[in-house]
Length: 334
Image (cartoon, rainbow, N blue to C red):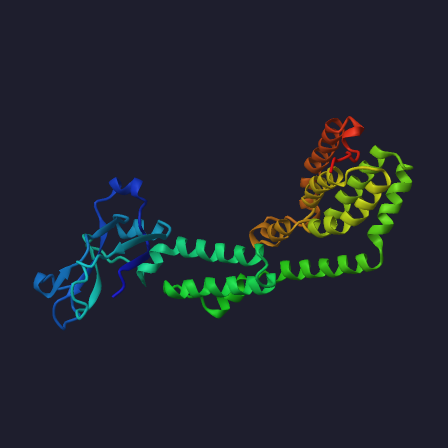
């Protein structure tokens, strides 16, 4: 006997705020059979024992109203204590009563859970902390860590008797998003091998004619544009070496320029559906696609805000580092 039972019912139920409009209700009660009979509708109190306090939900008053009122799903959880389950040799049933004299059509499902299900949030937090520990301290490869985390999550769901089917687990995988990210990673790897990012750095230096602020702004613009069509994290990782080399040529502290590039990359990555993994997940959502939002409409709506944020960020960087001496290498005493 599970200590937690979750009731789901669907029918012509009324919201609680409209319960005063009707005198009819359906009463759900968990009872314990005290004999071998399965019949608990005779009303004989000697054949069963009420385990928990009954729960009632108001329904439409007449059959006509029930026909026109849209079906509503209600939920209720019965939590049984040890005193309620004093003898597990007896059988338990869900008793359904109503004070309506007319036929009522409803569907009812009952799901039993163990005590661990009440601590589901704690189990989820434990799995999350376990996954972060594996990734942060690099105990195992990140791919293996993700697989271990997924396995632990399925195990916890099994413990609380809510194990999903294989088809449901497969449906959780967003194949479109994974395929797009996989293709982007291949594209970035090819560009890296061809020296594309080194070429971009050389072009930026030529366009800036060796001047400091034009060089920084050019790098920011290139980074923002590339982040809009490539993964912004990967873009920053590949732009970092060439940026450091250019900063050494100009005798500039690289960390200031890299922080600026990171901010610009985050802004540029939000411009298109493929610039950032969260954007990919959003645009791949079926509810978003049903609204007719595609690559063009997403970019069109995001672009005005992105441009304003881009310009405001460049202005802020220019004002914050208005003294070029703050960008240069500082002599450190050893």
